[in-house]
Image (cartoon, rainbow, N blue to C red; front, top):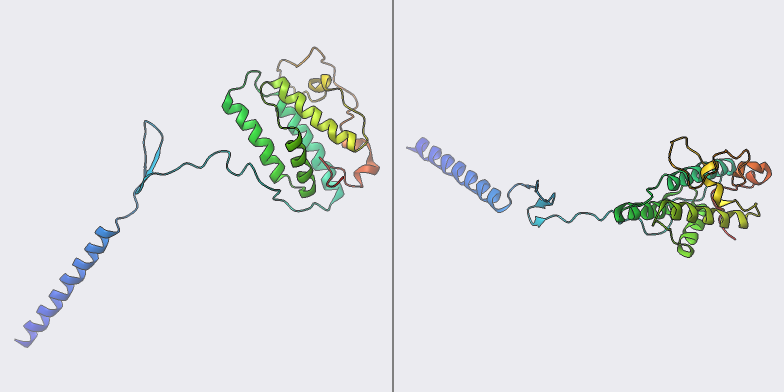
Length: 210
């Protein structure tokens, strides 16, 4: 009789424990999410999950710290100008609003994440004073050339003829040039490598301070 009582108590305790666990599972069901195949919306337990805006993070202060290596700063500047000029020269002739937003956001993200912090701060000032122009390929390329010449002027470098951009930064992609000039420029007045003495002073994309 005693053994039966102990068994009964153990059985009842097990049943109660299982009931309690089941109740907790009903109160806190496992997380379930799915994507609506028609709209592409992402749904979670509480309804539609908000999608992070592609512009989020493009506005804000400089993220990187000061770059103390003058040689690295100069090399980074030359490579960056080439990248930016080539990008605007291959930008669509008649961009969609999405493409225009993408280019605009890119420049602002670039100004935050550029590895030279003091250079990035200067570039942000230029963006505030001269917002990116993205209506056409020509508008984007000419705007960037203008901004580059602002840097050249501050560094007391010769002003570059923006009409020769497609010749200077020809990527060999076979795109229609902005003008009829096809001969490559032998000397690039925007190449910061032209003046080694200034390179040693740390001339990069833009130099912090005024």
